Image (tube, rainbow, N blue to C red; front, side):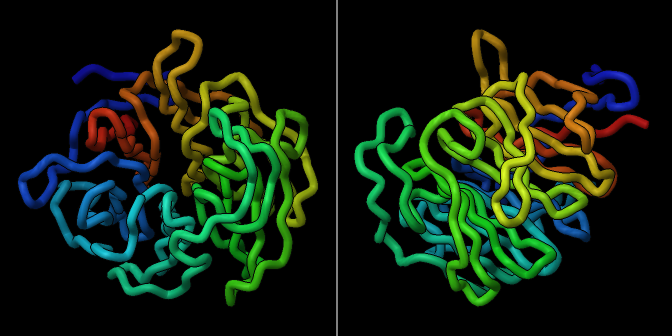
Length: 291
């Protein structure tokens, strides 16, 4: 099997590793994430929206979420909780690992007023939510949400769902956003926000103070932090270049860059294997770490 990657980060690629349990094609796959037990959650745009597989064997383990999510977008798994965003309904929900709703933020179909939107750049920023993209808890007990397709903000909530603060405005300067699309945390609790249409990842303190940014990438669709402390980034096609699954160090140095089919979501298991969620090809490619 051909290998991709560089140096210590080399992978063998298995296309369409998981098979839909009902024999039908997957819907558009928006996100992929692994839990602490190496169960992989595939977030697809058809029912059931969440399909769970064994990372090693590819065996189907569970499916859930029908009727709970209209337009699946963001999905992260932290501990015993699955955090999701419903783009069109402008709702964020967390679930138990078996699909029971734990918390809901927002009201279905009720979007904040951000004025005219052109190519995902809004006229003005507003409160929660208008097509949110990612939901992620923080060790400080709060929950952060990137609100991106028709907003330009990061929102910070208390654990009970009370809004504490928001930051961001439309644009390309520090602390501004053009489609904040995903979020991850570093080892110090700072936030890495994938600012997709600005082709960068901005770094903030938990209070929203700007610390810096990483550039030199296609539009970042998703960013996940592995157990190794590295970051796994799904990059859109840009400037005639293909899509990539990229591995960066905690300081942002590129460790590996693998060409991919159009990848919208990216997850990594405890063994360092990468799972690429594909929109156009509607499946999941597995990049098996070679050691």
